[in-house]
Amino acid sequence: MTVAIIGGGLAGVATAAYLVEGGVSPSEIAIFERDARLGGKVETAFFGDRPVDLGPDAFLTRTQDAIGFAEMVGIGDRLIRPSVFSASIYAKGRLHKVPSGIMLGVPVNFKEFFSSASMISLAGKLRAAADFVLPKSQLGEDYTVSELVGKRFGREVEEMLVEPMLGGINAGSTKDLGIEAVAPMIKNAYKKSPGRSLTKNLVSASPKSSTATPAQVPFGSFSNGLSELIDATIKYVDGISIYEGVTVAEVTEDPNGVRVQTTDGTTYNFDKVVLASPAFSAHQILQNISSEARRGLSSIDFASVGVVLLRYRKDSIRAQMNGSGVLVPMSNNFLMTATTYASRKWGHISSDEYEIFKVSVGRFRDTRFLQMNDEQIVEKVSREIEEILKIDSSPDLTLLKRWDKALPQFRPYHREMVASIRGAVEANQRVALAGASYDGVGIPSCIASARSAAQRLLDWTK
Ligand SMILES: Cc1cc2nc3c(=O)[nH]c(=O)nc-3n(C[C@H](O)[C@H](O)[C@H](O)COP(=O)(O)OP(=O)(O)OC[C@H]3O[C@@H](n4cnc5c(N)ncnc54)[C@H](O)[C@@H]3O)c2cc1C
Image 1 (spheres, rainbow, N blue to C red):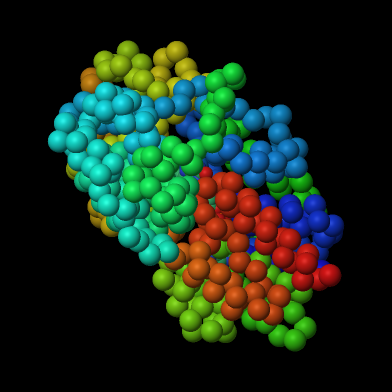
Image 2 (cartoon, rainbow, N blue to C red):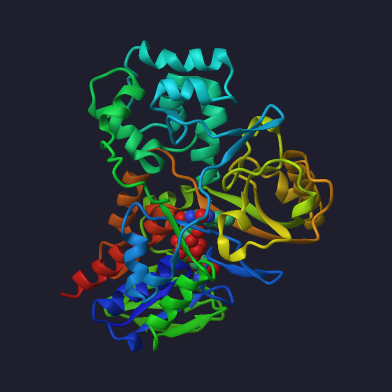
């Protein structure tokens, strides 16, 4: 079986690895990647003499997807964990610890939430307690996060806690994000239990944790940054053809297989294709599918974001830095949405002299940074971090990375729409879709998506 993989991000290279694992010869696999390097959103760069991630810097280890994949490609023993974990929230002009007794910003232990949520006013806390008495919310099969969480706990909890945590991961708003796609555990807990209170339902749905062993930080990475995962995967699939700097223009099926045409007019023939490029790219490439499937592909919105690395001398920082970083709710009207204390979070990039900050800007509907030039963005976020951490100098090293149309926005009924798109695209068992646009933005989801796409191809040829 000859296979073309369009898009050499994590989902693309992982698909190649799972095909090889499933018995396909590397010589029968080709990856076409528009950029001059593989990895897509996974990119590690040297910042000074330290390897720092410009895209994702960690993956969740609550499922085996990422760890199992790392083991398969031979770097399971290189896994590292963050040195620090919990974040702070910047609100009302100061840093607050993320309260205890919450899950994704939603109160699950009201006593702890009440005493520790210093960024929420008394009125906001009392409003949150209305969850216990409000009648059961009558909702459809899928709905926005805001429709459940905002209505039960009020605006303050939504804007100060849930939006920075859940909206932050997706660079989106709780008012748009579909709960099934971004917080299924919350939706399921509410749906399955007849109780009216979301807090009580979440508590009864959570597995009772054992206190015998201290919980491990549920995140991982590698000491040369996440690009190590891409490099190891490329090594694992040694012998495949890699076309870098090559953009695919069109994929068409014919009775003998699939024809891949690149923008320079060259055509290649394969038995199967895996489209592991974002949905808007798949929309351009797949001209001959049903108009409904094409509408579905084009309807998936994307948020553009930027990452700014800043290096400051440690002795110029006067505020206490706790945990792994700061979340910045929208009410601050800052350009930054969050900052990771990168050199605190990751021991391998720490130094005695400097702190490295990884600042995020941009989210869906907040495109202010797109109208700014690089210097303006770096200048603005530097002033913001200096205000938050009371820094009395300027950064001595900076780097800006723009990620255009980077994070897909999952609306209610995303899964159903993806099932219907796949039904049309994959009907002839020749073209499969994989990647963040369809199955989730997190690294483990992209790996699971790749594994599943590779398995479908293998099943189609049985
Ligand atoms: C700033 C940032 C921080 C993040 N942080 C985290 C994190 O900490 N943890 C986490 O789990 N996730 C994080 N994510 C999300 C995660 O990185 C992505 O969802 C994931 O890497 C996407 O992988 P992918 O292979 O699906 O897509 P991509 O990485 O987008 O790869 C798709 C590839 O397709 C190529 N392509 C597009 N069109 C064509 C074409 N016509 N022909 C050929 N090639 C084409 C693109 O150039 C690209 O390389 C972050 C994302 C960003 C942007």
